Amino acid sequence: MGRGKQKAKNTKIARDLKYYSPDTDYESLEKELHTDKSDDDYWYNK
Image 1 (cartoon, rainbow, N blue to C red):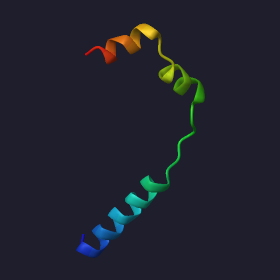
Image 2 (tube, one colour):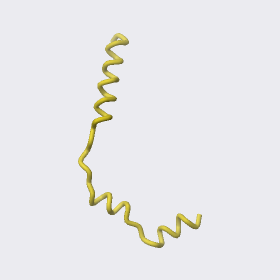
Image 3 (cartoon, rainbow, N blue to C red):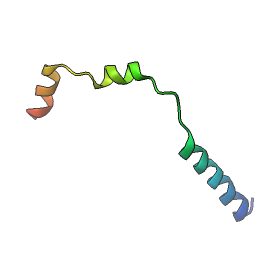
Image 4 (cartoon, one colour):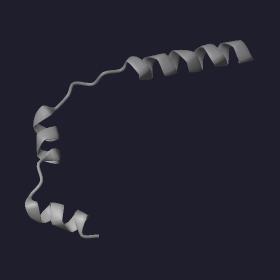
């Protein structure tokens, strides 16, 4: 492949990644963000 074709392919891939928007799983996000007080103490006391 010539440089022009490779650059065009890389540009297409970059554009696809930039505008890719997977469905957001809010339930998993909420579980990940929810912490107990004991977890907070662990990180703040380090």
